[in-house]
Length: 146
Image 1 (tube, rainbow, N blue to C red):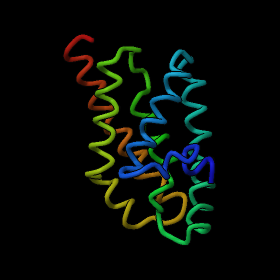
Image 2 (cartoon, rainbow, N blue to C red):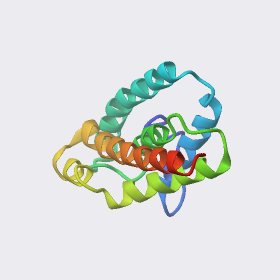
Image 3 (cartoon, rainbow, N blue to C red):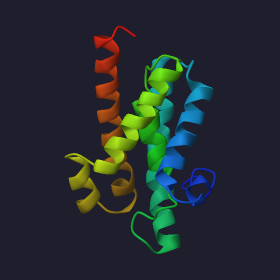
């Protein structure tokens, strides 16, 4: 539960997904100077840990995709922050873009959210949201020469 809930941040009031994304930003700040391949390897490991811990949390809490489970937001946020410069503006934009795509779930995230269950369903829609946020942010950074 500790892992699935992002060190219990998923139990904070009102918007657990937002708290989980904030934990993702904090983790990223600690590892942002990693080379790309080790960074992506770490995110991949966290993804699979999220599948297992998220699926276990579903059984423990006896709910599908329970609100306190935020490991998916942490991984999605880390993906959205991949190769982002260590500067407040792109970090904030990454956070906002990820939250936007996580909440509105454009295809295929919405399909995944409705049709996949267990740990895979918990994790994959946020991976898609993270990739959408990353793509939009990287495009914006290149267009504006950041």
